Image 1 (cartoon, helix red, strand yellow):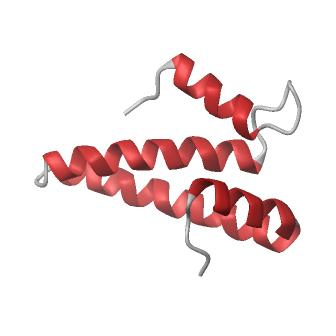
Image 2 (tube, one colour; image 1 turned 120 degrees about the vertical axis):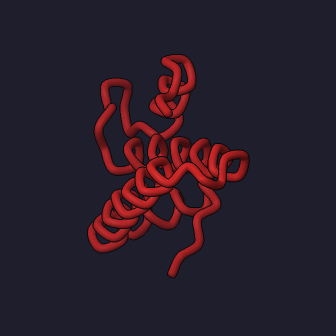
Image 3 (cartoon, one colour; image 1 turned 180 degrees about the horizontal axis):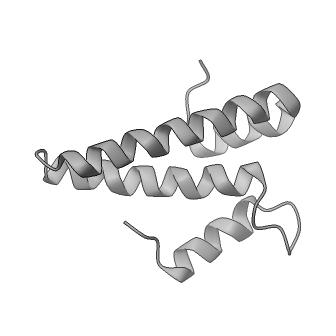
Length: 90
């Protein structure tokens, strides 16, 4: 499920470090979190959609790796990001 342009742009401006930043870890994690929440809602409505479930698991794994990298390299940004997104720290 793709995000519409306005929603994507608002997420990018919310998590970007500067005005031209579109690919930092924070932005990528924010975009992935939005897609994950959308797919989670879709799977609540359509529990037999197994291909979307596999896509959700792939997105969660991708976000997990980015969070692990951010935690290892820049812990202050990591702590701020998970607090803002409401993600549990494990």
